[in-house]
Length: 318
Image 1 (cartoon, one colour):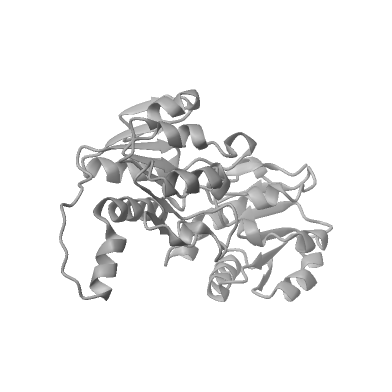
Image 2: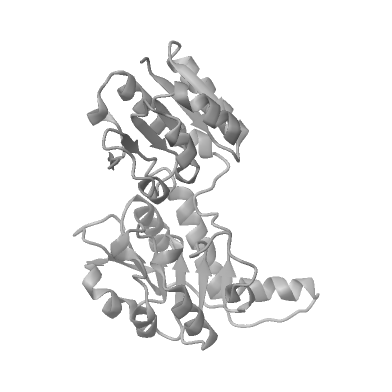
């Protein structure tokens, strides 16, 4: 069977068109099957040997309709929804790990600045036309502890250093650009006690489920903030809610949640020491342009029958 690639993005027809045009231009003989329709994706699936989609859009019914599937290109860093499908061992999985570093670092910094300077209170006063002033907490000379050290964390660390923050990492790595110190995960509680900002950028896996639990939260300073831009279940959400209600930490900036979309009944919406953003971290206005180099490189290796040359191979199914 000749190679054919299904491109599926239900929330962005423009991205689908961009990817399809680039692939057809670079690989004129390749069959490209672009769609933003779930029904059409399922209908086209039997003709395809590969699927290009965000991890959450690699749907079980699409995979089930692809008997010749041998490659999944995730247009995301995280692939936990793909892992949950338990693909055959013959299926190669690649990601776009690294492309999200600028937008993730910027959102993290937005949350850190907003929490430290009381941005929600500022905007509420503006809405009421109230002129209220208070001392502004600086980032200068504060300590940020980043749990999980990779390309996103290094991008964030550079920004932190520019603002005069001390940067400490929790990781198995022994060196990383922009970090003052690195410590193993076993020392998380001890290091969390030093944090003015505890930032979570660790991948979600069985060993990171509820990594930040009541004990870690209890080790943090009352003046410290938690920022989670990783995955919701890296944090014990119930323990966090209790901690925030009791004001045992100063607040939290949360982009990810145990259940998404965050239910309207969640107490997190109503806490005045919490900033909620709707899983915006990986998004950008140049997403397709950021993803294209990874996609083109991997398609070239795929058509050449050289899976070892593919970028960001994150394993096989099974």
